[in-house]
Image (cartoon, rainbow, N blue to C red):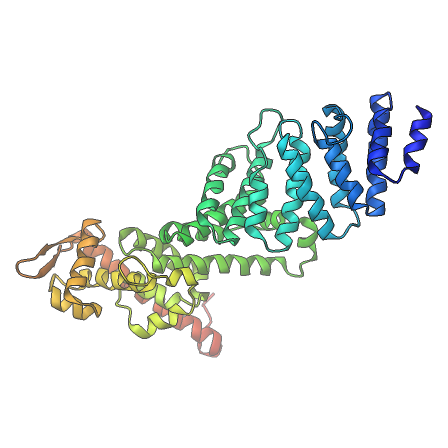
Length: 439
């Protein structure tokens, strides 16, 4: 045995060295010598030897020699893959060996779940660094997270599901991302789930998915929740060390929250016009931070149910992302459809009735198309009223006393907001005009 231990280290061929180690009698000695051989091959950057090492320990039966007992190979390979990705080998060579390890370990996944999971995560890191988002997501999605052979925590499962979803979102595959966000939802929603970073990333994924799928109302709500993130969550996402290096963490948090609030504002404007959107707009307009948003004037006009003109729409369009300007099935862009529906919603509060021709002129559409859009909103109960096709007329239901009070309250709120804007302007630019408050 001692001669075998000393002999393999002088061998230049990896097959011969592995054959020599196989002849060692004890389990512990074999494991130790396999580890030494792996370290030697990595130090020498012996790619042929490393490939032979991976194949011999993972295959059953191997192309040469006897199969290494699973109890030994599992332990050795788990240590080897960790050492491989922390070695000084060039990334291209680590990637090549990682792909080989994935192929071989996957063939015997029931025996090598742990090393397979380690290799998958490390390979995903490499692919992500190369901006191969879909490739990284595909590798991670093959990790067996529902296995009964390993004790996998909910925290790890949720972390993996959310990471895969984020990668698919970068690859612009919202369907695949939605699948993994759905899997993480039940875990993140548990009362004992406390990982703030994963909770935040999960919420961000849901907002982006709703946004990408043009479910703007849901997206706006999720973005608004993200705009109220506190310091504890930001530190959890950044890491305590990185957070400590930030010169002004409160300012960073404020900027991130304003960015999320801005996305909420954009999605709220693009959301289907109706009572639900009105409630969402009210929430945003009452938030003091909203006055800092570039789309706030338009947000306020829409909240007050005022007609939006073409120059305002063109200015707002500059804030949109490509998917928010995509063409819909009815031949209108997302923005065009949102603005037409809003102006029709505003018209329903301005008129008791209107002809198809007049509505078409009001919306800059043909009479037939204006009628079709109005019919859709009436059927969805987004505006109250009825259509008389014989007379070519749309009748909007008269507002009852409660609705009139709400409308009057909206006018008062608009006036108060305008007065507040004027006061803030005077305080900022002409502070001497303000009278000191009496004590």
